[in-house]
Image (cartoon, rainbow, N blue to C red; front, side, top):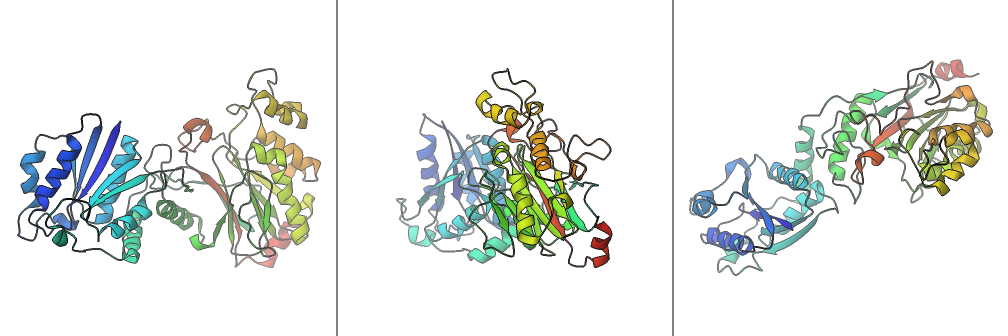
Length: 436
């Protein structure tokens, strides 16, 4: 068992604060049943002196000199100190943190934690109100920033972090120039955890990348791709076949597809083995995206998206182009035989080794077959069977340098997206030349 502690040394005006900290650390280090790491959080610009002008680190130097598991967080901003602390916690693969701080400063610390951590982590507080410190009134003096200032400080800090590689976007030559689109790879962002590094574009309560960091990754992608981040609408995945007809319906709580005829609106679908699907209709001037895992594939999410374009905006299936983005190939994806049988019933080629205990399954081929059965033309589907165009349907599991993969990386995996929009400045001539 291992524990991690962060001790606030920013606020202390109390001349007895150093001895308080020493008692707190002794209460931790005296426990032989656990391993521990202690982080001392100093203020910005090396503010190491207390109200009496004494160097706080010098007061503790003798006590800490024999303890190699004590670390100093002394960076330019409080944000950077918390960020570096998070990197250390992630490297240790820990989730629970005990925080020693003053009662009045706790809300500010909670603001930093909200911005830089997710629900994966648990924070337990021991405040000056709980500690047997005779000077706790002085120790409780607030030097806290408002929550809005914390958010701005975090946002500015993340923006100046160096990117890991360049943002790389894959595009299909089958999609008309009337539409802007792309599929992301994993490079060009600031995510640091190995399985999320570096352009992770999804945050959840089960992963370690906070929304603020993902938002910065999205900002960098948007700058590269040429859209405004606030106009991005990412499907709210439920691994089903529900499709939101944007502009005609209220947004559902969750769904796996979006279709719209609105210009300037960027719609996107995530994928990390699951397929990000892009749909364009240059005749009716309609676009769509969908997220398709193996469950959604069997439930017909691809064709449900085409049908939503037809019913909502007057598209015809024969006018729709469908592009299957980076996703897990049959080379790397297996299911239990009972589940694989459902794909075998679509076509035997979807399960090349049905006799195995865990057969390999080709969810891309199943998607193509289901789309063609409902009227999408074979030549208007871009997937890994197409050999006369540059491929965008690469196997995410086979290419760790380029893509995130749930199959390969486990539960704390990163996410790519496929994105699509019709530019507001697009001309009628553009669409007219695409009609067929």
